[in-house]
Image: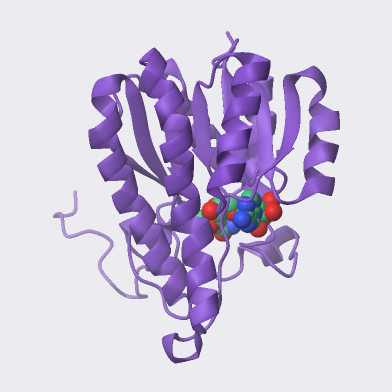
Length: 264
Ligand SMILES: NC(=O)c1ccc[n+]([C@@H]2O[C@H](COP(=O)([O-])OP(=O)(O)OC[C@H]3O[C@@H](n4cnc5c(N)ncnc54)[C@H](O)[C@@H]3O)[C@@H](O)[C@H]2O)c1
């Protein structure tokens, strides 16, 4: 059974990374996918790969007029929008004292305003027909703090809050809104130097599953939340982080008792 058969899904930042994995998985599950991204070359190449089941539409998520055009185009072509994955995002690495105002504004514009505009323009179309699912790709950094990425952390917490507010406004119209919180994922953002093999898992020793995530593993969470299997899930936050947000794994110290329970 295909879980997205006959449905139409928009994936922002769909040309690369986990957005591309999401487009591939949704298409495989029967959806018609709109790859919405500023990266035209990669977006068109992915649309060609997916054939009749996808088309590319250039979208800068920070631009409300482009969102309006996108929604009008999709409704004219497909007649419906069933799912929106607000996945486009950027990061800026710098201590708070060294984050420029321009960088802070840019991170907020893409990560927060981008999703806000998506909900604003697509949510209305979903509300009108009384059904739909929106997934906001936040981060483990929307569940706890992290140093050196303050603008990003603040934006991902904001996205988590936006998700709750939207769930309250849209839930009673049949539109479910949820957030996904990936840990480290093997994309340009999560593995910028392109480490391969065991090397790409270095630094993950204290994450319970002790490895970086794969883009398809995050796509699977978005698919679940957009499918009918998640029909009673609204306003939830789903960590897909190998257990990272649960805490840090520490191996038992040598000589420590194996168990506090009495032996035998
Ligand atoms: N990779 C990780 O480790 C990780 C961890 C947690 C959360 N995330 C989040 O997952 C999402 C996807 O990240 P990724 O790792 O695939 O990153 P990526 O850099 O591989 O891909 C991001 C995509 O967003 C697009 N994009 C950027 N600005 C845009 C804009 N203004 N309008 C439209 N598209 C735009 C890019 O062109 C690109 O295709 C992001 O929101 C990111 O913050 C990533």
